[in-house]
Length: 270
Image 1: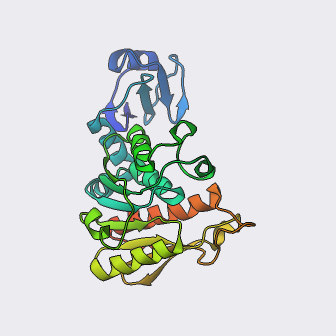
Image 2: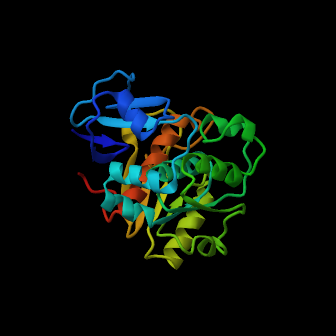
Image 3: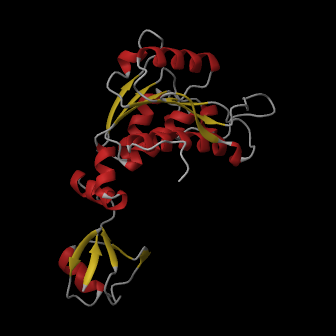
């Protein structure tokens, strides 16, 4: 029979999952067949997809790379793995963007933020209650390492200015703006487009409240400059920043970066 074992195509003559486990990974205590937990008595069929897991075991870099390549297709994953993406800001947008890109296997992330984790951040930012008081870049780096220890992380606990912006993100293939304040967003966009016009910038505008998800879009506003959001909603007393809508914009930005890394237009219809 031909099956997929941990995403690799192999031939097996074993009939039961118990026999297969005892030969390939006898210490496995979780057995998954075609996406569902299975018992040792399960009868293996042609084209089954089998995954054997030992609880607490961490895949090696090579194993994780193979699993990701199998999911993404090798050609796609290779482009992602060689890429470097910069994220300016590690709050509601930046923390979610970083996690999304680490999960798809981007080779290197450069993070920059001067702030610390505060209790009010937990309503929308990807931190934990025991990380309150830590520098956001330290906390986010630790979280990313738990998700994908093989993604390279470079981080800077500093306030980004027009003077240090291009030095911090000098090696990035794409820069993602993830600030809160409008004046910071404007500074970053003006500086980057002036000094690094050939390197794409993905920014955000309009994500407050709990309005329609369908109002959020990705659009090109200038060559190599993409803007995600609804373009209008701003945080105010009756319309705060909340996890669902901030997350939608963050994932628009992450997906725009992914499409750019793959040579695709983030605004083009499928």
